[in-house]
Amino acid sequence: MSDTLARYPSLSGRAVLITGGASGIGAEMVRAFAAQGSTVGFLDRDAAASEAVSRETGAAHALCDLTDIPATRAAIDALRARTGPFHVLVNSAARDDRHDWRDVTPEYWDERQATNLRHQFFVTQAVAPDMIEAGGGSIVNLGSNSWWEAGGGFPAYATAKAAVHGLTRTMARDLGDHRIRVNCVVPGWIMTQRQKDLWVTPEAIEKHRARQCLPDLVQPADVARMVLFLASDDARAITASNFFVDGGSV
Image 1: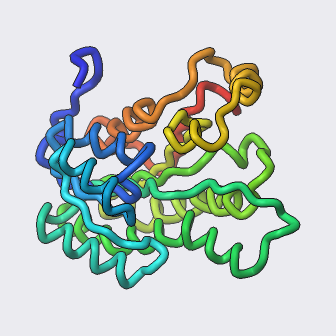
Image 2: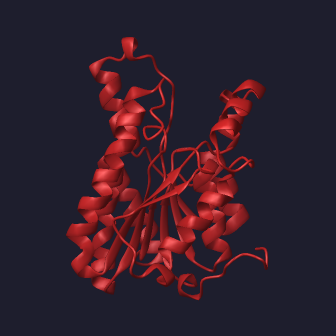
């Protein structure tokens, strides 16, 4: 970890659960919490990538399809047996597959909500009792600035991500009496390998830079640093809020 970046003593030894931790932003958050000395467990469905991240960071992982809620609950229980009760939850898993509104079927719509929204609630439901027992905790949900920008090309995804903000604020109210903080981090266009492989072109980058206030493209580590702060005791009075990490593109 760079000695120019913040270290949070309150995160040392704290058990953290991250969904979608095998790649992209999720994997960067596994690395960031591990560097803070946290006890990290993560969920993902990609066996090979999960093994690689675990070898790199020492984090525990469990394989599951987050759209399968019973399997997800079982995976959380398996991780808890290795890490201890969770004090921090990061709901990171999502897929921003492009789709034309003309082609969306009811089945596809429901699958997109299950992939990008539903599991955030049910993972929270599974982990919040740990935090209640501990007397507090931090939940960080990942939203998206796509719907704030009125971005097109993925209406089911954008709708699910908009709903994450409603979930964040209502759960902040329901869990606040237990000193559990619930916040939403709102990434912009983050330069993950998936984005580079599928959608980054010189023309797209030029257009995007023109929209951002800052000239630098936003990296996964930039999102992880915001999440670390919100998970730490330094953010003890912050809840029900949105934190944009998008270079000023909204």
